[in-house]
Amino acid sequence: MFREAMYHVPRDKWAYAYDPYTIHLRFRTKKNDVDRVTAMTGDKYDWNRTYFEVELDKAATDEYFDYWEGAVRPKFKRLAYVFRLISGEETRYKADNEFHNGFPQPTGSFYEFPYIHAIDVFTAPEWAKEAIFYQIMPDRFANGDPSNDPPGTLPWGGQPTLTDHFGGDLQGVLDHVDYLDELGINAVYFTPLFTASSYHKYDTIDYKTVDPYLGDSALLKRLVETCHSKGIRVILDAVFNHCSEQFPPFQDVLAKGSYSPYADWFHVSEFPLGVKDGIPTYDTFGFYPNMPKFNTANEEVRKYLLGVAKYWIKEIGVDGWRLDVADEVDHHFWREFRDTVKAVKPDAYLVGEVWSDSLSWLLGDQFDSVMNYPFAGKVLSFFGGGMDGYQFASHMGTLLMRYPQQTNEVVFNMLCSHDTPRLLTRLGGDKRKLKLAIVFLFTYMGTPCIFYGDEIGLQGGQDPDCRKCMEWTPSRQDRELYEFYRLMIALRKNNPALRGGRFRFLMANAGDPCIVYERIDDSIHFTVWMNNTDRPATLSHPMETDDWRDALTGEDVPTENGQLAIPLDPYGYRILYRNLA
Image (cartoon, rainbow, N blue to C red; front, top):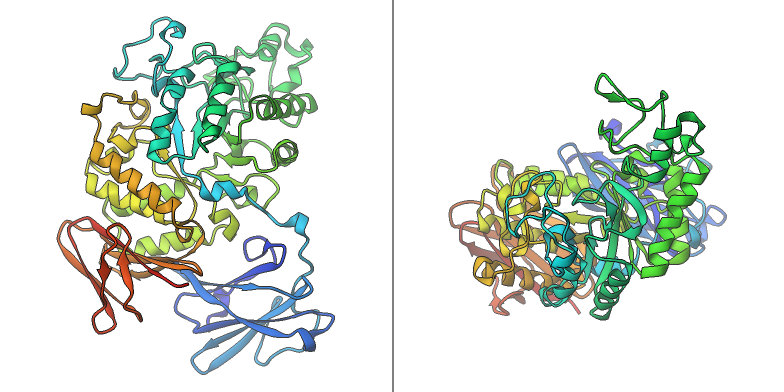
């Protein structure tokens, strides 16, 4: 056995409390190097009477490693453990920082999970596991009140630029809540609504007012209440990393320099404020001088921003926050932010914008979730071509092992957003490929999100082209695609196994873009079959039972000689299920 590849630490994503009674253990080995991994466990104070073994499953595989996982329910919430590793005729034992040829005696060298404290268990909001999100950029969704249009508003449906307004507003969203409900949406994520000079509102001037071009607080409250009456949650977008140069405290620093009482609200390297050789003399978002960066270590800044976070939840009743540029704000602030928001609304859903591995924000003391851009990148690379099933399964295995299970169940999965080209555009306008990607999105672990207009075939390249106006003329909408989205949303909402069940690839081979994978819980077993090629294919996989049905048509699907053989058209899919209970 290749010991150098083996890894486990008794913390973080490797050993964590899934609930107040259950500990999840993970162990890493070299790919295809170990046949079995067993956790040998007990209570350190009474090892002999509490001893029991748990076989770990090979939960995921990537290019280099196998990842083994198992759940342990210790009787007294304490756990000492060692791993037994078997490869062929060879057996080894891995204790904390030591390998042994024989079973070691229960000593201080064992791994330990000292105690499951319920207060320490990371619990994401239950409703987030059920959520189907729909992202709305208000200026581009619907113009419900032309009387509040900004000067120079362009006719609806024109080609967007980096600065133009199209007049969309909160009344427009309110007018179309029934549309969201009919689609099956039960959660909405708004890009910023607060007063700002731009159409996108990521340069906030006043954090406690709705931008008058979008409406007012009373209208937002009515919109939220209407959504809630239909079972639709609402989260808002907040920019706590930076503000607009027109933000009054920053204007005071511009005018008074180091004498301003707000001088320490920002990261200033030199007074007076200005731009030298193209670089601002104060920290900003990127190098944009119109977006100065907050000093969130300043007590007054923290008090102000945390007050904003509480205000909109208490006054309007929103259900959480999406947090812009979250990785550039200090962890101390986010810990205090979580405590502040959860004290007001314990089931608020907190989603950080972090584009890479985000484990340090997802250990239960900061965010519930992050925008899962790595997921989008791998899915689009696979269904867009250029990656085989083996590579795709390896990448998805790596992503699954990044976070604890409770995070994987609510991680914010989207295939495009206001910051990326549109889904259909990314896939070359091929609706068949889009459908495969959407099937994967809605049958994978995590909380799915749709960017407004994707469901009716809206296309667009990189910003600003991806931020086109929503198309409301039925003859210009792809209604067949809309019905497909409705079908997939309903399938996910009606089947808990597609939200919380185990995920595993059953077939993902080198040189073959076709895949088969499963979602399974105690009640139902789903298998998803995908022909990700431009030619017909029949996919086969051994199955022990003969009680499969098509999840979309209800037809029986028999096995032959212990195999399921599924013929598929180019870029085709089938979703099968069998009842277990």
